[in-house]
Image 1 (tube, one colour):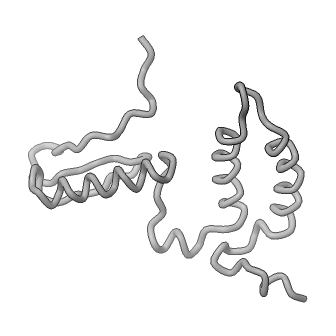
Image 2 (cartoon, helix red, strand yellow; image 1 turned 135 degrees about the vertical axis):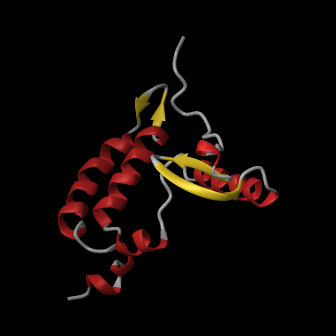
Length: 123
């Protein structure tokens, strides 16, 4: 029987500590007191955010500030490989995007995403 690799993470209480814990993408997050209303609300919020982000890890505030354009390109490419398909084959959009993303990464990949924009490209 195939193993589920995209299942929704479950809430757990490790070793009776009284805290609800959930692991999303290898990161343990505390939800509050185990089986409390607050922990259930926080669980629902985190799962909804994770599912809305196509099951990709969510970024903490400090990680959002330091992510580079190259890291955004990698995340976009993973999404695009699943999205731009017809009958299981890559569409022309995906094929054309490969070269453009390669050049874009070479020119701007080292730039922090927060600093990137039209003004940053002026010489």
